[in-house]
Image (cartoon, rainbow, N blue to C red; front, side, top):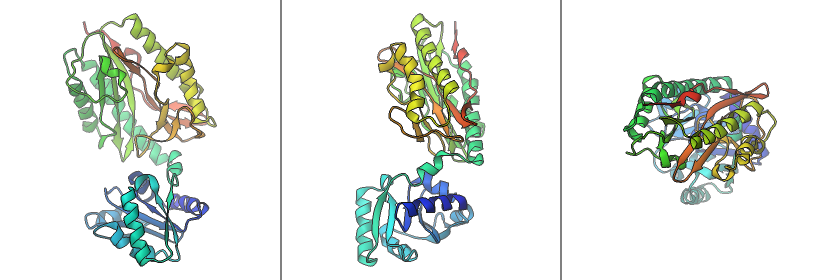
Length: 363
């Protein structure tokens, strides 16, 4: 954690700040190791404070040894001035603007102005997140373990899917398998989208019955040691028709081409174009509405983004998804997604769940 704090301190200084308040949960865990649901970090060049309430002080002491744990109670505006006083001579204090509601900002500033003359609260963006983009070895190992839990569940449950089951039943079987085989949680609500529901990229599973001949989009992930995985396969029960074959092969070709040609140094925009150009050539460009991929780590969606206009340079040790898709209203969708990491300049696929034989006959 010390190295992470040192890297952050340099960024805080470059931003012209004396200190930073970290409230975003994943950033808080990344910097401190603290996994509790309530807490704030106050970080200056010579201080690292973790403020939390009595429910978590013992836990924080174990998990965040690089931080001085301060027990607090009540609204933050009540105790913030006292903690800021410990950071003197800090007067320019940053906060994470994307994580702080405007009403809270007003209370904070009113409290500080009444008790800490000359202190300014200044909005910041993306001070911590860029540090999280490049994964350390233990982070990559946690992600790999999460990937394996999702892969195993997909390969175990897909062969048991039958017509007449509901989307909810399939989703529960997948989640149950992941949890019973070492996942501490799911990364997000499992998506099972049958037939026309598959045209909605983030459909929530319901009581829709699975039917012969309809594509079924399954998107799921496991969480291990706080780190996420993300996996999508498209299943067909029965014999594929020409439409399904054409769309599935287009998506698979786009995904495999992107994975094979991704290189360190590309921007997220360039990475996205590797797959998008093939889908556009197949006349489905307007049916691929989301980005090619996103970073995966403590959050299921985090930088870098592989999408149109994304300037993020891709670097070795970044971990992200590659997930092209085609979605057609009234018919359904096909999406195929793997987690990859960049190593020695190229993409290495971490996901191993079967792709080709997700198309099977149930007759």
